[in-house]
Length: 159
Image (cartoon, rainbow, N blue to C red; front, side):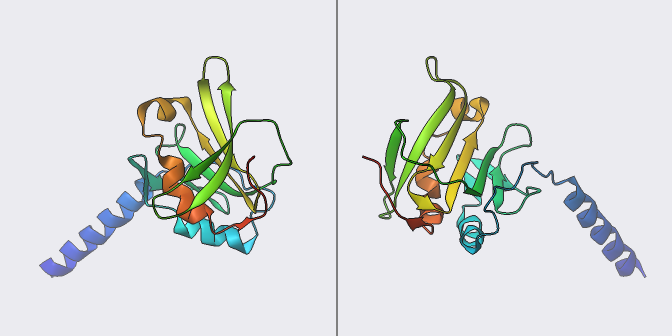
C-alpha cells in the first residue's frame, strides 16, 4: 500500500513539473509545412549559446531560453531575393557552410534584436535573437545551427 501511494505521489509530481515547462509563443512561417523543416527542427541542438531548448506553439519552430527573451528559429520563411544587405558565410568545423543575411534593430548603434535569415536556401530559415541574449551569450549560435540548417537545399551563395 505504501509503495502504491509513493508511486502515485511521484507520478503526480512529474505531471506537475511537466506542466511548469513554459512554451515560447511564436508564429509559423508561410512554408512551415515543407517536410525539410521537420528535419531542420529535429536536427537542432538541445542547447544553444548556453540556453536550453523550450517548446514552442507553432509548427517548424524551436526556441532556446525563456519566453520573452528566447532565441527563436522558424523554418519556412520566404526565401530572400538578391539583396544589398550584409550577407555573411558562416562555416563550421564539421564542414558546413551557411550564408546568412543579418539585420539588427538599429544598424548604427547595433542595439536591439538581431535577425538572421538564410540566403540562397530553400526552405529559408530565420533566427531571431533578442538584444539581451545577443549581448550576454556566445555569438557562435549560427555555427551551432549549421548542421541543422544545411539540410535545406542550397541554390545561391553570398557574393
